[in-house]
Length: 611
Image (cartoon, one colour):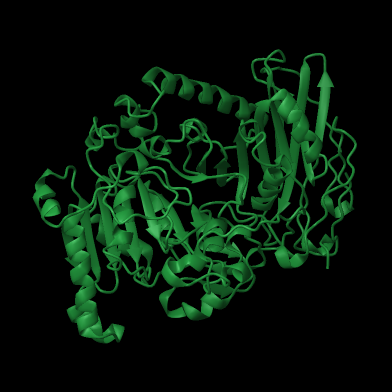
């Protein structure tokens, strides 16, 4: 399909097209891209895509046409394209369907209800346009410190947070010095202080949760210490903070601690963090602390920096009543004891607690205080479920037969059998089944590497697996150059996301009948294994595809793996989108009914969107 581009815009990038060469030895799928960042940094990438390890000579001369020519040459075996999905109006450039600002303001502000997910009843059936001048983000690690202004053109934080070194505007880029409200001198120095108490460097702490993350500098700098952080913040007056995080190449989602449980499993994180996150930890009998306790692993750490810690020294600086701050900290300390958290340190404005490995030492205190324990079987039932004023029990008959202390340090834990499986706590999943799944995904990912040779070179930083299972795809792809958001669908048969976390990976529960909690254009590559078979008869395929298009960057890639009859239906719909694609056989040959569809999203801007 022909594309329209503004050849007069010096920031417009050029992207090569897809060519398929068929021969006696099979077919070869070649994708070449020539990307221009707009900042004098260009790169040309040619990818040989092959199946079954065929060893044929590729035609040495290929006539790659660029976007600047106004046409994108393509040779494909897809059906004729008609009724192409039109671009949405340009006002939807940064549309987040379930966190729409105008809709949010119609809900109550009590307990942050208006910042929770509220999805529309009528979905857009159009393609979200990129902003004018959109360019490919810088590769990691440069992306940690610089983001192209055109990709998220919002300057408010550069003024509001100027003295805190969150973000600076310099010419045509945003610069992120690594500062934060509690660490204006930089995240590295702040993390060094935490590391004097918390074993961050030895692999014991691998997964972290940052509540109210800002632009996610804490998570960005933890990456160098081999810690992967799930950061979240609401879409509020701080425009685009989560969008900035993802543009930087840092895992983040739009979210809030309000009325609904966080979309993470019980006992998932090695460390949780709040740096002036403005969460009222002591209210509602510590409801939010109890929710953090639910997702914190035994032996995990909770870091609270900023008010009310060390109130007696800082109350004048914070310009808040001394008695109010004193009461806030008293409540936090009291709730922490009931949760069986041991205070390890209070230094300046930073306090650190550790969740004990077992609750025997504080059982009497809990009983005397009349603590109510949650039903253990409900600890992972979180999708749109309200937080409960109860404490998640330590000794569930299912989950704690093998204590968390047996969890291996990272990276050893990536390929070790997770304790939840060893203990038999995951129904229907044996050690043998898990090992077989891991073996299968190593094979699949090796096949992907033959198809997309740059898959783990750093070209794709933000990767999503829409149906992650046990995290086998992410584990096989593991590289310091990328991270994977492992999504476990709420309708999946095996929906224990805790397995993923016990491998030292991160993920989230989600229902793909709804929009994901992210901004448009935030993922470089999307992997979908069996997603359409899973959602057959549950919701419309085209809505899932349009959501994939919304969150995929221009010139990002998609890998679909599914049954052939399902992919044939999906293929017809993709023919109506601005994707170039090719369907190919399973790596074991054409007789296997499971097929693979590879697609690349074309580059286009909002100059073609409806005015």
